[in-house]
Image (tube, rainbow over the protein chains, first blue to last red):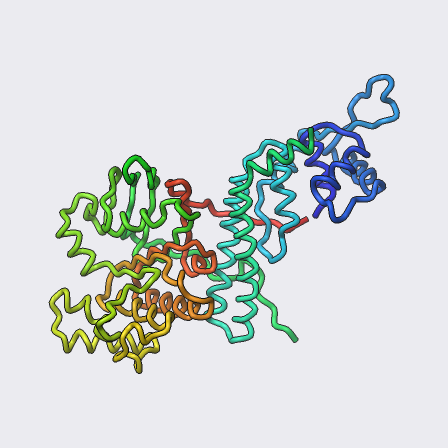
Length: 176
Length: 247
């Protein structure tokens, strides 16, 4: 999962400073692998260099905190990424989950992403189904392995689609 | 060394453009005050396998029954090879179902008193074929599905996978132009279901038969050329997608 796009997504939702971003990133996007503060600041520096985030003018009394916000280019790059289904491979739950959360946080339709991802999975599953019918047993079994894992992804997608409202409510409580 | 799967996108190209065989436009159907289908369009080309997916209760089986002329829609149009199914009299529709359509359901719905061969021959005999040639045709199809030694058994003496292959043979024996399959492997274990689908998909592709395949399983839908989704009674055709890596 890209820390760069995760931070950009959080800044797309609301301007923020480095420490707050670290806390929200760990809490919302990747609770199992907390991001190091140094990585947050170096990533913000690179995002700023690339014109994807900018520092806000800070009011007196807040001089110690650098507040960042996403630029128009940053929003464009993030939205392109959020709209693009992920290459269907087994074990994609982390990046798919992050896309679902960021789309909810930024008010984009989750169904659109899930439909696109479902179709991407089915395209790959069709390829694998033809492969398993036309190749030797070893290749056929490998294709079966991939098919079962992709099917698990799809079940998760269906469950997610059915529980988007619950997740949105959960995120609202966590970000309040 | 472990063999590697080809990368995504290395599979066969898109299905060639083929003429439409079955076209549904704005089909609606309610049961009492409960709407099961709320419209949407769908086209099945000649020789095309189309999967219909959707959550339980989404209306996908109702759609299949309307497309197959089993249920009359309340609104919309269903055109089959230039003929309006939704406007046909019941007897004309029944005749069409017997002669040009084939059906496979979740539970094979074989006649328990008849042998496997007689079950397969039955649709031919119902349309006037004599018993001997009907049984000969049935034997050919049983052979095709690896059931040549089981023609004399009754459904109760067959495994679930064998019975379902008999049901597929029965659907194929009239040489239909389109087969409607509703969860055809829903009652089978993975290995038996895979064997049925491998045999079924190979047979219909070889014969150029179109298929509407209702399923909630992605692995089953993956046998089709494309998939439409039914959600809350509406037919959704997924747009083609481009994917990107995970970074």
